[in-house]
Length: 450
Ligand code: PMP
Image (cartoon, rainbow, N blue to C red; front, top):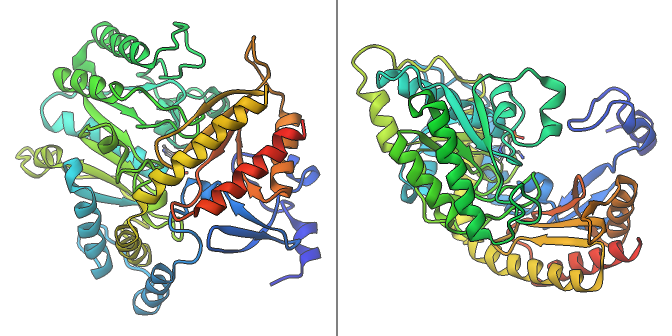
């Protein structure tokens, strides 16, 4: 490994950062994380802080799970790679598909299609949704519905159903035939509706209207996150997902639950859809599937969707889609070990308890600081704090101030994430009560710095 000075001098000179402006990182060098233990990360200068971001909403088991690490290391020596394209398979992939299917059996999921990450999983669901209708004899069903403020990754399909302008605008024109419904965002919405139950009904009505306008027989699928993550941790009323499920079913539209963040216990349930008592037709997953230790995702199909593909008699069910690293044996070993550890540690139960603690603590901070416009969470370890420069007008806080809060909180012991004027938190599901207290006192220092 090169020395620290080399790393600092060369940081970002040759590497472009995802979600960052090239050039910007030369002037404002990123924090270089060199090691991690438990839920704590250590930077190049030796500062050790609690990682309230969980890597990127993904390190669900914390950084020190030896069962997963050993499984990865062992597999590397047994079989470091083989393709799972039709005609070949490998033992760890077979085992992993069984484990994933068992994990999501109560969500009605029957089949697993492995990918290399969340964007791939979303893309797989969108493409297979179109193919599903084609096999069924409804090739006009090609359009997609989604929610504003939703985040579905960065491939062209995912970006097209994405509901956040900043992930779209530079890459237009995107996929035609994608339409966006209002977000269940009570703090700001076009109806000025602050009651989440009423807002859920308005969104359901907007979906009905859009379906009637487009024609149900032109729509393939509706995709949503059970709790919107990157958009600012936007928690819908408990009635929303069931209402939209019913509308999709009635109109023959597939419901895709994007569980890239909410899957594997983060909401206090094993899936976000189960959290709201809904069975989707497809699920996109990634992140927590390996606790972030290896890049893996999975697109899941319900038994009914699988049936259409498997019972096709017209020769239209060939899946001409997939990735070199689909069902990668090392990734697959990481999946099986992660799921078994996730179940053994019952991470969802700790996520629920610590999530409540983090949310309640954030609400307390909101009583102390006028710059806190909105606090969202309370359903597992996903918390968003929206910062405003003026509470009455809800004017978004400027970025230099957001960065000051971020740095002050880091210096006081916690890494949090900025998403525009939101502070986003998604720590490992293994975090302790005392470590949540550390995060809250670091935030206190952060807000006090303004
Ligand atoms: N869907 C959701 C809900 C996500 O949060 C993300 C990533 N944050 C993605 C898709 C894309 O996943 P990836 O970054 O692994 O491609």
